Length: 190
Ligand SMILES: [Fe+2]
Image 1: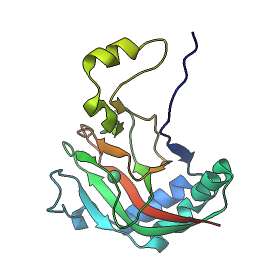
Image 2 (image 1 turned 135 degrees about the vertical axis):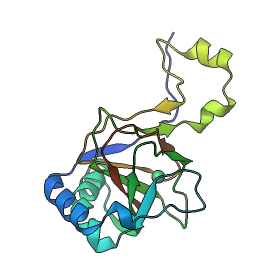
Image 3 (image 1 turned 30 degrees about the vertical axis):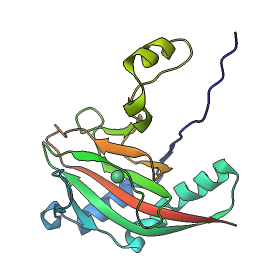
Image 4 (image 1 turned 60 degrees about the horizontal axis):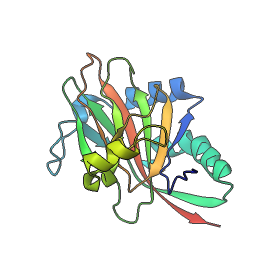
């Protein structure tokens, strides 16, 4: 009997080639002591708003490779960007980036130790309506019905994914500050 997969979700991973230089520049320019927690969130990470000029030139190669991989010519606009700081014990609650017409989200791992730091994860909202019985029946040789996916990332990586994908960050147990940059993107296919 043949089985066929239906639909799919996808994320893209790009290693920033000039990461060391971008990291030094941004961490010299912005300090955790100037970051703030936003009252509308339950999580305890803090953030600083960035300007497009702070980050757009650095991630442009990632956006270009993204377009090349999809074989699409598109104009990509950066609506907003900010730096996230995680002190020990900080986490990011589950959320998506479907705000203000944003279609894509980007996360850049600026200061990140994959062994000790809070882990970025995607969450499959479909699992909220899948019973344990059907998940158990269909899991195995034909696929997996896990609700959480931890993408393999290293410092310097840039993830690009659809803004509707729910995601979060598990509690950060590292001694060092975990720092990422997030961006909301829109595109227009030429
Ligand atoms: Fe996010």
